[in-house]
Length: 348
Image (cartoon, rainbow, N blue to C red; front, side, top):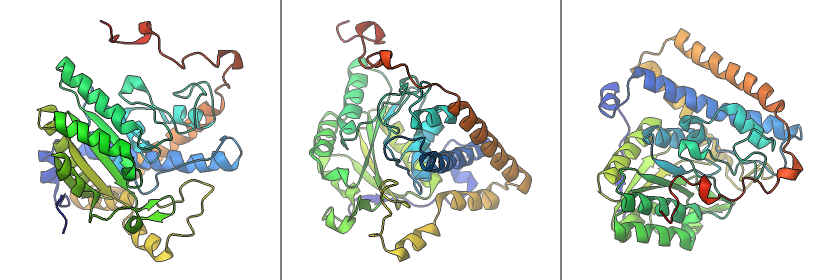
């Protein structure tokens, strides 16, 4: 029997207005979702052209989850998004051309040609770059939340992880510490049903991963990860609760990884029927339909948004392709932070 609360879908424009969004905000969310998918689709093209070193990872099917949560974040909040969460970077303001530059290892990418092609973040936008050892970023998010508590700042940290990563000790340690100290942190589990090729029924024994939150002393919520407005509403509630001293929340966003673990994986192990079922719940098409029915989005408005996204992507590809490769002599620069680089040095 499930313990965690199961979130209801958003039923009307009135409900979402009460959650803090107006019509222009809704169109902005739609644009961010289109940009997110478009960036990753163009990334596939760059990979096939041999312009992306290493492998390539996407979050197709997770656009609602990533954009919905990022939209709920405050300007001073921080987050540790992972490789399925491109929408977080887009929503927080990372320019698409810089993402393409990152893909290709160019100087103008967020890491200036260093680290993996998706191991990126812009700290000026409140984002912390990921590492491959998932969920190693959860203790980092918890550490940020602890710093906010010590400094008496009304800021919230968000940490993302996949359902497969929930089996690691970092998840337990981060959530246990956050629960004991009632820290201002929100945990986001992108449950895409496959830890590489391992299905969920071989990953954990509880009904939902959000059920585990109760053992750590805070609330767990399960939300449909293809419903961007439901994700936004639940993330906003959790973030504001944390900001006001109410402690952590674990949000389990249910979706399906609609592509393989990476480009080298054709996902042959996922039943075709499962892909077909979840394709009917495509988050972008679902939100487009909702906007037409509830926000009276016209053909002209839809076409304008779509054309603007295509124009942005085309211009971004050209600009990124003109970005230079980094000078090898600078390889050790900007790898470690000096005391002078820190906004608040630890010894002050």
